[in-house]
Length: 120
Image 1: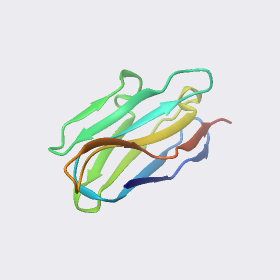
Image 2 (image 1 turned 180 degrees about the horizontal axis):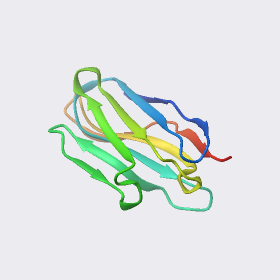
Image 3 (image 1 turned 60 degrees about the horizontal axis):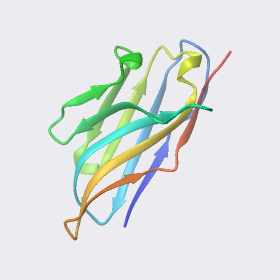
Image 4 (image 1 turned 30 degrees about the vertical axis):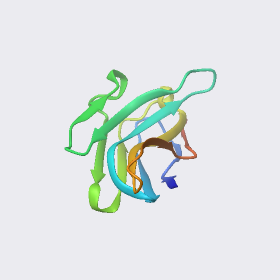
């Protein structure tokens, strides 16, 4: 079994910054990709950014130039630096990892989510 634990959410004023962290642990052989998704009330969950083991990244158009995803492969951690936040970024942010387990199964895992609220 694999566990993902997120941290770093909270309340921030428009224009402010937050840094989210996600740590993966458990029966991990390797991790193909790690990423961040978000879900606002009444909306579907959407990709914010993801990063692959080789370092390539994808970003949603709405966050390009404001958010930066990074990864520490040795520690099985992924980070999301969020700058110039606006109220439209308010959502629950979820960490996702595509993991090759110690039994060589490839499975997606999700964290429990962390709330980000952008408000004055």
